[in-house]
Length: 160
Image (tube, rainbow, N blue to C red; front, side, top):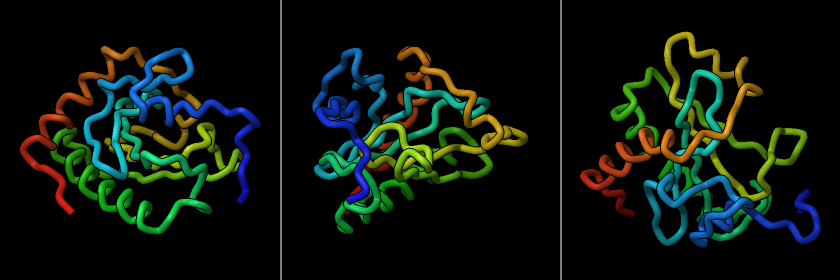
């Protein structure tokens, strides 16, 4: 329903979920700081303006958008996002968190696999005026954001 992925779409998020690292996916396995049997969370490979190192949470199974994701999977994503938001507040010492989730190209969806963004917010970061100011960060640059989150979840495991 309301699908926009082209025929023979190679999903970059599905590749990352499967552990593939190649030119079709920007996500590296080192970006992933949380994974369970339903979802995983990773530092996004794109750094946006003054907000580098934001997080995406994705289902392990492929669902293109909000319209088709099963409620139980969506509930898990929201539950994990709450725990990740708390972790970001502690680890990044940010002032707030924005949650962003895009459905369909007109809303800004670029990867046709459901994913929820969590942006740590800082004083005068101008996140929304910088949304078009993004770059793919080098994997080593992402490590400084994923490693503290890995450490956090080792000492604060998520349980359901």
